[in-house]
Image 1 (cartoon, rainbow, N blue to C red):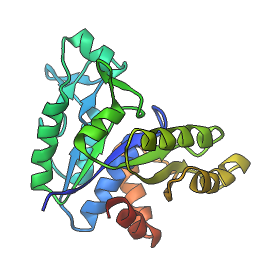
Image 2 (cartoon, rainbow, N blue to C red; image 1 turned 45 degrees about the vertical axis):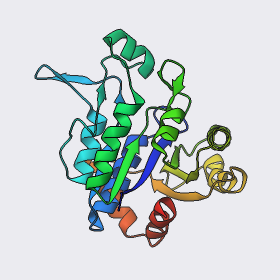
Image 3 (cartoon, rainbow, N blue to C red; image 1 turned 180 degrees about the vertical axis):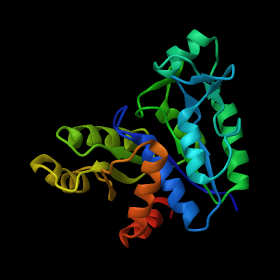
Amino acid sequence: MPAKSIFITGTDTGVGKTIASATIAMLLRRMGHSVGIMKPVTSGCIERDGALVSEDAELLAFAADIPVTRDSAPYLLRAPLAPSVSASQDGVRISFDVIKEAYQRLAERHDFVIVEGAGGLMVPLAGGLLVADLALHLGLPIAVIARPNLGTINHTLLTTFTARTLGLKVKGVIVNRYPDTPDQAESYAPHMIDSLSGSQLLGLFPDLQAENERELVTKLTDRLLQMPATGIMLREMFE
């Protein structure tokens, strides 16, 4: 049986999409599943020992307890710009077919595959093709990572409505970095997203402090494993 898979997107850059994706991977792994990870295109890669490295893919691989392979990070780009621009600067042509072949190999080897997009759905990847087009090319449903504060309702509704207009199946929304003591806007945002977006609220990922991203993912996983709703969230995401 091929893996159950999800394409993770965000309402914007910087909403914590990689942290949320890694946490989902670690939750599944801690529940005893084999988890593959994929960051198809990474711009803003660092150079280490003369080679470009995707720190996002490394965090996802840490969470899944697997090594980073070429299949899990097929396109590594230098400049922290829109991938289409960064690829052009590097002289790289991004091929959706190359990405799909890599994804299919991962799906054959794992129970689940977490695919993390770049930025939001409208980020340009290659020519006139967007992140949304990549999700469609892979044939994957999406989960949307949103921020909790003022303005998130507009950003989230724009994302979910656009996704469905383009023919994507939206599994739901995760509000990331949700504070223990939300302000007024943060208090009503999850309910409004749940009732207005046409997509279910999958869960709230708490705002936790940590020394580094790996510690943060581990702490988030520990917290979420204590919550009965986490199992429901995963079932809804992958059913």
